[in-house]
Length: 177
Image (cartoon, rainbow, N blue to C red; front, side, top):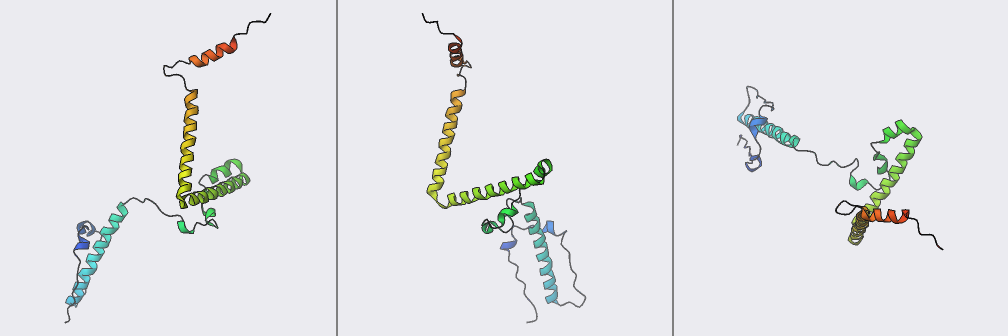
C-alpha cells in the first residue's frame, strides 16, 4: 500500500526520441534516505524532462508559417488596429520628404489600407459579390490582353501595317484642278 505506481503511456512516446534529449536533461539524484516511491517519482520527472526537451527540439525545428497581428485578427474592427499597421517604408519617407509629408503619406496609407481591408471582408461574406469581383478581373485582363495584342508587330516580325499607314500619311494628295 506504501508503493506508488507510475503509468507511462507508450503510445504518446512512440514518436519521441529520448536519446537526443538525454544530453540536455538535468538529472536529479534523490537523497540517501529516499523511498522507492520517491525514486519512482524522480524517474518519472527525469523521463518527463527528457520528453519535454525532445518535443521542444521538434517544435523549434518547424518553420514559423504565420503569426497573427497584435490583438488577433478578430479584434481588427478598424477602431485602433489600423494604427498598429504602420508601413515599413515610413522612416524612409520621413527621412527623404520630412515628417509632415511622412505623416500625410502614412495617414493616406492607413486610410486606404483600412478601406480595402473592409471591402475585402465584405466581399468574402457574400459568394455572389466575390464571383462578380473575379468576373470583373477576368474581363479587365481580357481587355488589357486585346489592347496589348493590337499593338504587337505581326508574327513574322514585320510591321507592314504600321509602315503602310505611315506611307499613306506621308504622301501628299494630288492637287485639285
